[in-house]
Each structure stands twice: as structure tokens, then as C-alpha cells.
Amino acid sequence: MSNSKPTLYTSPSPALLDLYDINNTIVVIIDVFRATSTIATALYNGAKCIIPVDSVAKCIELGKKIEAITAGERDGKIAEGLEYGNSPFEYSKEFIGGKTLVLTTTNGTKLLHMALERGAQHVITGSFPNLSAVCEYLVQQNQPVLLGCSAWKDRVNMEDMLFAGAVIHQIKDHFSINCDSSGIAETLYKNAKSDMYEFLKEKNATHYQRLTNFGLEKDMRYCLTPDMANILPFYEDGKLVIHNQ
Image 1: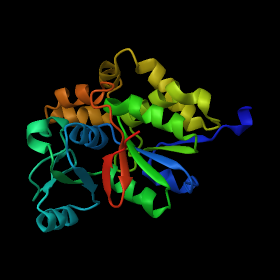
Image 2: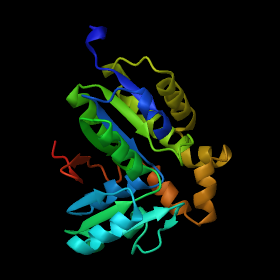
Image 3: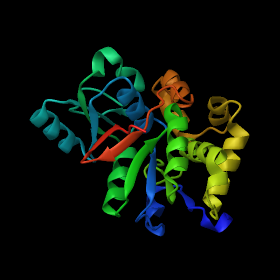
Image 4: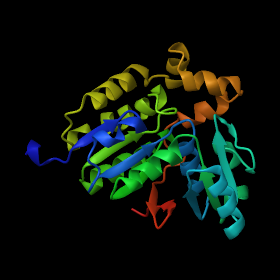
């Protein structure tokens, strides 16, 4: 029966999060360029856990306290005072294996903390490198879902909407979707899926421009490639760990 399916909504920006009831809901934090792609990659490559924090000061303080790797960015560049940035290529098996990473980013870690404050039941992170793991988990759990796009400083961005659209495209038959932003996301994805990098370039996406100016084409191409780090980062007890399905 169609009316017994759980609901699925898409929030295109953290500024709109208040419009959704996220109690008893799985919230998927999406920050394709690059926080959630990097989170999936670091855990896939053997990081013990990732502690997401919402400020650089907190990141530095916690890193010292627990002797962890401190990393993060502000405005696309390594944040001052931190050792490492937000590129998935910084977190190879040799470097990150068995270590704890404390991470802060402009948009993604901020949205994660907002969702927790609003009472989200389960928080996972999603990006193209772990697209299949996210889709499988959401179908399996059979609970209401909110796809939360981190956007860029509250302004909607294309790549997060593309990922929301990719998820919707794969799992929509299992959910009751009555949400225009989900329809917009899926339409965008269907138009872009044959070559998402070229699509963002052609549409002159703002984050594409920003990262291109920093010479980060390789990062972007990786962040748009499905299932390169196909694990599910799951938030529990203050940290992101791999969810064992």
C-alpha cells in the first residue's frame, strides 16, 4: 500500500532546516565538495573515527587533548591553525589508518550539528563516493528520511542537489515523496548524470568555480564518482564511524 511508505523530503539549504520535522527521521548530511566525500574516504581507508566539530578553535583544542589529526577548511582552503585540509586525497590508508580525525568545514559539519540540535534520530553522511551504501541503508531502515544539503553559506548549491537527486532516483519507489525540492533534485540529476563534472562546468556552478580557482579539478572529479569509498558513516556518541550493515 502506497500510504504505508515512509516520507522523504529534501532540504536544499541549512537555512530551511527549520521547516522540516526531523524527530524520528534519518537525516543524511550531504556536502559533496568536499566534507562528506572526505569523511567517507577517510573511514573507508581505515580511520578509527571522525569527530565533526563546528569551529576551528574546538578542532584545535580537541585535537591536542586526544592527540588526533586536526583538519578542516574555511572557504575552500585549509583553515589557519589546522594541519590538514578537506581533500579526500590527503587521507590515504598509509596516513589515516587507525587514527582519529577531528574535522571542521564551512558547511557540512555545521549542518550536522544543527540536525543534532533539532533532535535528529539518526544522522549519516552521504556523497557520491558512498552513494550505494546510503541508498541501501535508507531502503533497509524503512523510516522517514530528510536529505539535508549543506549548500554554501546557506545558498543552495548544485552538487549537493545532484546527490540528493541521485539518491531519490534510486530509492523513490520505497518512499512517499510529496516535496518539490526532491522533484527539482531528481530532475537536475537526470539532466546531469551522464557527466556531472561537465554539467557543473557548463552551468558555471559557484562551487565548481571556487574549487577550480584553487586547482582542485581532481578533487571534484573524485567527489562526483559513485562508490569509490562505499561505506556508511554513521554518527554515534559524538563521532562518525562505519555502520556495519
